[in-house]
Image 1 (cartoon, one colour):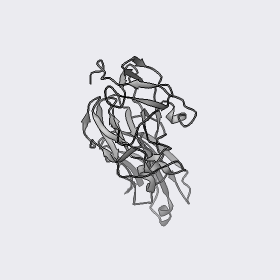
Image 2 (tube, helix red, strand yellow):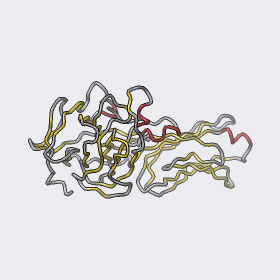
Image 3 (cartoon, rainbow, N blue to C red):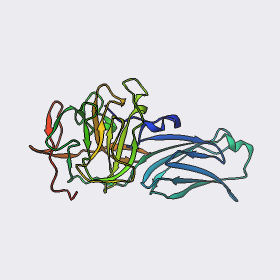
Image 4 (cartoon, rainbow, N blue to C red):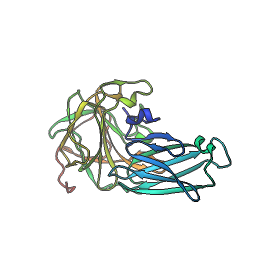
Length: 291
């Protein structure tokens, strides 16, 4: 019904967060605040300790780094920005000599895929995320009171049996794939079990496909996909009450969060500007978006 949220290193798979995944990590002096995407190194320099952020992956991320001293005179600091793929940049230099108390400093990091300055192409007509000629009932549309509020304001849930082919709604490059989980539930924390695919679009937004079945991804990270390509198999993993596909387009926002954006679909009956709960929309291949 909604994207999983990450809240610790142990739950880093929860979102792609984000990704449209949000991940947290922690470290101490001379260690790394690190996961497979973002690291913050503490490097001893003549002036003190330099904090340097590095993006290990090939896709841009928007990050937030918080430095919280447990002792000493330094105040809590927050650093925000965007790192391009395989890029690194200094955040700050903490002045003074290195002392044993520096080991008490806590650093927390969060990130989401995408550039906070990305601008969604509102004229783009998305393809429905299933095979041509088929249609599926909308369980939740834009602004559904059940769970599509705030970050998920413009997400859509399609009722699908497990194993239903999922097709790319727009061309792009596969940025994240998680397919190892086999669990779905509705309690708090269930989001960490979601399987999903994140596709980076050419305008810097991401198309995200959630609740896929275990081993249900048919594409690999770095693969270019075209609109209409079969990319995965729907399922019932993560924070979910019944088998369905959760699809939305997200834009990174300041503070390492993401926000779904309104999109329009092409269907056999014309353009769908606002998918309605209970409606069925028949998929056709779009002809005007250059894919």
